[in-house]
Every structure is written in structure tokens, then in C-alpha cells.
View (cartoon, rainbow, N blue to C red):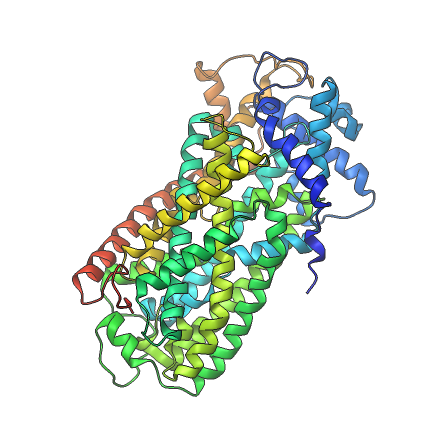
Length: 576
């Protein structure tokens, strides 16, 4: 299959352009136009993003963006700036006042924007889609809560993903490009928060690597019919991951990642047929839950212990996770406004797959439903088909998580803190390879120490509002609230002139600026916008509170797994 949405420049040109950007991006980001001695501030980012979107509109001509264009208009007109400057914007306005080297870097970054909305759809779906825990979530919660939670969490994930897109188009420009989620964090919440989020997203990625390695190891163990130590099966996939992540650029990995979508769909269709003609896998259910073979029981409302139901909820939260790399996907699109269309289609497809597959498998297998649903058939030959196909898709997904996690660590730590070599240099290749090995082996230690895949996934889903902000709800809503606070605070400032320092009427050390930011300026107060601002604040607080409950439930699940007869993954016996 040809992925027409993720075509890249020639490799040699891409390496040269990427090298220019990676080697000096930090310098460009800290030197705003017209002044080499001051750091860019909120007004710089917002106004140049407005200029960028106006320039994009001129380039697109009569192209319609529908709802995306309407949503982008939210919040416009609050900050005082000359409207004629915005309406007459051209692409070369982004480079006005820059020297030749800075212009070259800006043009190089612009040249990397190659992906279409179709390419963004494939990347979003590959990143999020993970349907094989859906039946387990219905087992833990029952028909009614499970369906309602998938609807509610799907809607919440769509809303928060939309907020990420909105923040991106409000803050990104050729002059001050948004390269990752950390850039959005810094521009709305400051540098200390950027540091925290960078590390927490990195932790999320390494736990994802551990989870996918365990899933692949379980498939390999079943293929070998137990004639291989489970810990050796994990090591095999750790080594495969080390090889896959020698690919450094996301564009070169995208064609491989898109194939995982079709493999997952194929496994779903095959397992639907297998499960309808096979009794549950009683032996694996006995190992996982300690329950013996018997009549299949299905519940509208599950009656399991509270912490087990909470763990099931967190698996639903985790099922919609994966939006951490959304800003990186948008950054490579020719038209960032088209991302909302790609994301909407991807989210609709994912929701339909989750609900259909979860309800179908749970209806046939009831309390014997396993965490990895297609392994719940009793015939070995049918297990083998699902395991082989899932092995490929799982390893591809693990490689994608590894690629993102490694880039976050390398750019922010190796280059940023230790002033290491750039990623595309010969020394950078050696440093990257060493980092790959360390990253995957740390993932092995984390994954092998936990007895069951679903408990580890539940813990990730529980803390993901904290450590995976793009995937979940707390950070996108919180950063939107902070963005709107700063926008309202700037309403009474002097008219901003691009390239000149902003002339503020007061500072954040004065209560007047805080009052204007939190309650809106009388000169530019928009009641609906103020309501939306505080709704985001409320969702942020609620998401953080829910995270604590999820951590509690998953922690008890992990403790119960250690107390049961299930072995950890450090031994030869499989945990399920």
C-alpha cells in the first residue's frame, strides 16, 4: 500500500535540512525578531502565529476549512494588534529582520512540512488504536458502564485532542515553530513546566515500550507452546526494538507504522470468526484470574471488587491514549488546519472498533475474557494466527513509541543539557545508538517486574493525565486555561508591533493583571469565552483527581497480582 500522505524529500536533502534545524533550533527559539538580547514572550508567539495563519490562507486561496476555521477564530481580537498587519500578511513577513543564517533555518524547517491530512490520519490511528484490551474492559465493568465509558472517554479524548490542535495553530509559526508538546507547554506554562512534562512524557513512552514488549513476548511464548523461557521471549523483542529504533526520523518510519492499522483490523476480523466457533481459553483464564471452567456469565453491571473495576476504567482511558505526538504530526503537515479533519475520522474509526470488538468478545466469553482478547480462543492453531499477525503490529507500535521517547530524551537531555552532538552528525549516530540500547533495556526491567500486562496498562492509564498530557485530559485543558488567561491579561496592553518588545500596562506581580486574566477585560470581555475558560479549568482539576483514584486502583491490582500464583516475567513461566 502506498502512503501518499507521508511522502518526504530525498534522504540526503532531508538529512541536511534536519541537521540545520536540530543544531541551532534552540538558539533561534530564544532570539525573537528585532532583538538578539531578549527571549520571545507570549505576545511574540501569538501574533506571529496569526501572521502565519493569514499567510496560509493566502496560499490556500479559496480552500475551505469548515469547522476548523470557525474554531480557530475563538479568542481572536482580544490582544491589541493592528488588524491591517494580519490581513496583509505574507510568508516573507515571518523572516523580516532575521539574518541570512536564521532565514535559511526557517526555510529549511518550512521545507519539512510535507504530510497531507491522509498521512496524519494514518499516524493518528496507528498511534492510538489498540483494540485487544476492549473486551477485558467490558469484563471488568459490564455492558452498560463499559459502553457509556467508551462513549464518554472517547468524547473527552476527542475534545482534548482538538485542544492540542487549537493551541498548536494559535502558537506555531515559521518564525517560532512548535516542534513538540514541550514547546506548547513552555509557551503556556513556562520553562519549569516544560522540564517536568518532557520527563513525564518520556516516562510514559518507556512504559509503553515495556507494555508492548510484554504483549509480544506472550504471543511468542504461545507460539513456542511453552518451550521457551518467558524472560527470553521478552529479550528477543527488546533486541528487535533496538534494531528498529536505529531509524531516527519519524518520516522514514511512517510507512511501516501505517501497516500496523491494517494488521490490527485483520486480527480483529479473524478473531471474531475464531471466538464464535471456539470455547474460551479456560487454562489461561485460570492462570490469570484463578477461576475454573464453568458456565459463561455476562453482566450488565459488573460485581467485581472496586479496585478491579477502577482498573478496567483506566484501561478504557489508556485505550484512547497516544496523542502525545500530535504536535509532532501537525508540525510535518503542509496544512496544519487540516489536522482536525484527519483526527476526527481517526477517532470515529477507533471508537467503532473498540465498542464493536469489546461487546462481541465479552458476549461470547464473559468472565473468561482475557486481557489480550484474541488469545482467549482454546484452539492452538487459531491462537497462532492471531499471535503472528499481532506480533508484527505490536513490534511496529513499540518501535514508534521508542522513536518518540528517544527523540524527547535526546533533544532535551543529550543535546540540551549535556551539549551533546546533533542527532544527524556521525557522533550523534553513536550517541543515538547507545541511547537506544539503554532505553529498551530499561523498558525490559520495568515490564518484566510486573506480573500482568493489564495491570501495567492500567497504571499507565491511571497516571497518564499527569505523565501523558497529550493523550488525556488534564494538561490540554490546563494549558488552554493558561493560554486564555494570558490572552485576556494582554487585552489592555499597548498595541503590539511585530518585532518590537510588548508594551504592557502592568506586570504579573500586580493584582490588576491577574484579575484581568482570570475574569476578562471589560474592554474585550466575551462571556462565552470566559465560560469556556473556566470549564477547561474544572476539567483539568477533575482529571487530576481522577488520576489519583486510578493510581490507587491499579496499585492494588498490581499488589494482588504479586500475591497470587501468577509469576513475574523474570521467570520461565508466562504470567498468563
